[in-house]
Every structure is written in structure tokens, then in C-alpha cells.
Image (cartoon, rainbow, N blue to C red):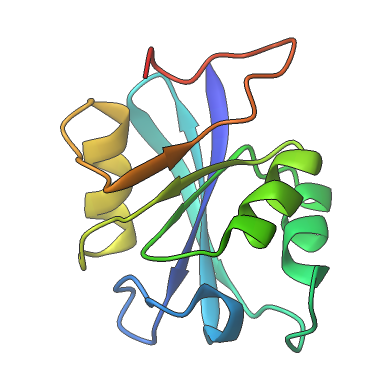
Length: 122
């Protein structure tokens, strides 16, 4: 299964705990448990509700974040993006590889469980 996973990151590519005000997003395309490609993009200026829509329009299927409010989680789900919250402070690649292999523990896990639901059996 192919996925496009977003992770809010700082200049060094490490998880930024403040996803709404991060300097970059790592956007990583995956196939099965392998990373196919990755890019770092600058998000638009912060405004409520914009990032879930912007990432959804970019084809993102999942976001891995440190923390996120319930309203943001709901907005991501409404835009077809599964939110995995409570990620540890690691690089985007480490987070995504751990997530794809089922070895990453989140303190919260929110999935929209839509019609085409496939989120690894959580």
C-alpha cells in the first residue's frame, strides 16, 4: 500500500512539537514498509484550519505529530488524513520507518476509519 506521510520538522529534520508553527514538513512517499521518496516543504503561514486542508490537497494520507488538539485532529480526519499523535522526538525518517514496521509507540492514535480504512490494525 502506498502512503504519503507528513511530519512537522525543524531545520535538522527532527520532529517539531509545534506542528502548527513548524518551519517545514517532511513529506515522505512510502510503498509497504519502504520509503520511496522524501521532500521537505515550507508550509503556508499559520491560520486555523489551513494545514489540514493544505496537506490533504498535497495527497497526504497520514500525519505523525508530537501533539495536536482535538479540533486539529478532527480537521485532518475531515480532509482524509489519519493523525498519529504523541510521537517521540526523533527524525522524520526514524519516525516513519518505525511507524511502517509497527515499532513506534504513540501516546494517542486517531484514525478516521473511513470507507477505505487501512491503518495497520490499531
